[in-house]
Image (tube, rainbow, N blue to C red):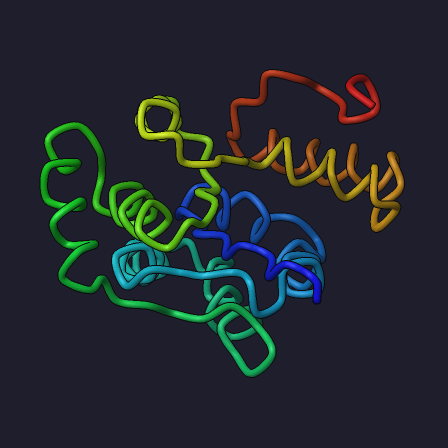
Length: 170
């Protein structure tokens, strides 16, 4: 019997990076389907952004949080206990992702350096925008030109990337 794949808890920035690219949200839905999780805190951050003239983010709710897509979740009592102290140094979205992933043995998907450091301190698995694009190329879901195009689009919207091309790190 195969091991159950871990859930992935996506923060607002990573979701936004993909929402701002052509086909990015549908790519996430296809690649991560029912394993992708959006906490209520992340969902609220996205909702606030859509009201602040970031209408491209509406497609996260319309195309990603639907049947056979990502699920929304609330924090249970144990997760709340992890969440509250994290608020000293992190935003609600990142803190909620870490709290859930820690309790549910999942993966936090974030580009936030402070959040990534907290994950490392707690032995919580992490990934981010670059990791997703690289893994999709290695799994032949995207070719390197598609990944490079998506990254270029993200950078044009203000994403700070440690690399300019995914093809450079394959």
